[in-house]
Image 1 (tube, rainbow, N blue to C red):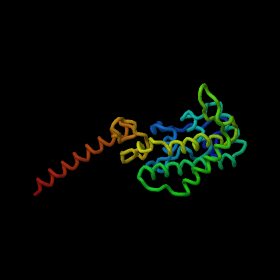
Image 2: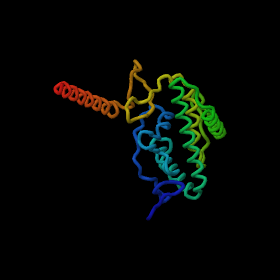
Image 3: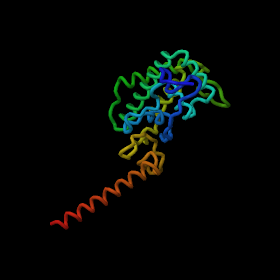
Length: 227
């Protein structure tokens, strides 16, 4: 069956999710993984673009929904493409605001008031759809079962507020690799972790710097020979 780009997803017939490569989840928390769905070092590669189906693919990848929920939401999106496009824009806006707030707090600067207002707005909306229930000897927060397209916003909005108010915020780091801007939670004992992944970004950075030193050494030897 021929497929085409649509308002609800890319290359999707409405019955299956788009086949797109997923980046490893290296943030260490849902909020940072959510913020990492855009990569400014890769031509603004956005896991949530161009449509709602792409959002569902990432949510499935992150374990926030299962395949049954993804299929049901995709069918609803196909029937309501304008609504799906609106929800995708809200998710992108929440993601961008969340990332901007994390980066601002990490650098010790005040987050933009517009970003804080958007986060509060989505968190208040999420609270309208949840409640506390008893589980064993304690309470847990749960969301009402919903088939609404914007239901996928609720858990990330609530979790973002929780994480940004958490004592672990000082452990947030930005990957030190020149070609990576992923955020991650440094859980090392001495707080010295510099890369989102030592085997990829760390190794690539060390290899690049080693080659730069070799090049600088060769240039210096050549200059000495001429003089």
